[in-house]
Image 1: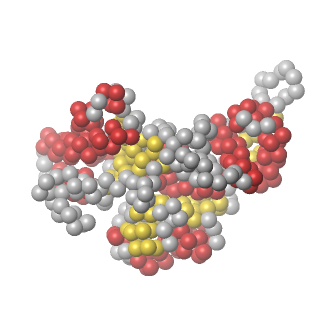
Image 2: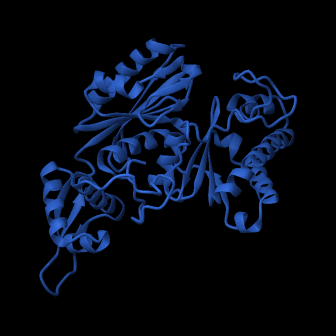
Image 3: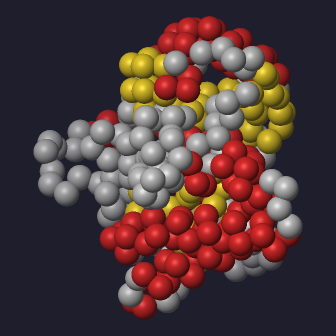
Length: 384
């Protein structure tokens, strides 16, 4: 994430530098302190200046100055005194103006259409839109995406602070699509292109990683989790110690093309037996088509066991507390999920699996949209 502190402010996690490489400049300290204040108000709600100082370990003078600036920016407002307070000088509460600004989010997970929304800072969807892609790829798809984003920005009824996009493919921290074969994008500076066309900050990330952000911030996900997205393909987003894991080549979570079945079906990547050939929605639909309920359940359980075998070493290596599945409930939430959890438990130590949960994502089909909003929140306000 954009900030180097977790919710508890300790700075632990894979996103924090293990060794200092440069001194902290004053402007960095100011941005960090601003983020602490906004983060607290975002997660804890209206708070007095004195309580903010105690919660953030900042001085009251610093808090007073920061709050004054945030009020001027229209991000924070005074809300009156705390109800029921009788002793001493009444404390004036300050709170985040969640409805003063909005975020535009786009989900490019599905091959056939793009989904978009205008959201409040707290994740409520104000406007929804969708647009058929009609087989467009490459530059044509970028042009279509630009028009779609313009429509969403025009539909907002408050100032838009930024645009977030969740897309398939390997995407670096600058929003450059390293490769997204199904979109015809190779070395495409998508965030930069859209930002120049829209005149707004634009942030782009892999859709599975974006889903993990959405669950972490809005869906109550834990600080050690893996979100498996199941659609036309299969991907995963990983959060460890409250920090999204990117990987050396920005490809962390690319589990869809791990070979899991000997002599399996051909995969779009050119190999055979990849997880995607077993677990993607088209593969699961084919597996249950025309079968009795009993046989369908058996087929889904078989796919769940393959998923469990794939995830067991990941869960064990990272000591994750929960795995979330994002995709069609009729396929995932039942024999498949149960078989995956049983398999992980059989293949890991009790110290690892005793508290492990494997559940459906709380945000369902909106998980990538929510995560795309978090991309903007994190980069623009330091909130996640």
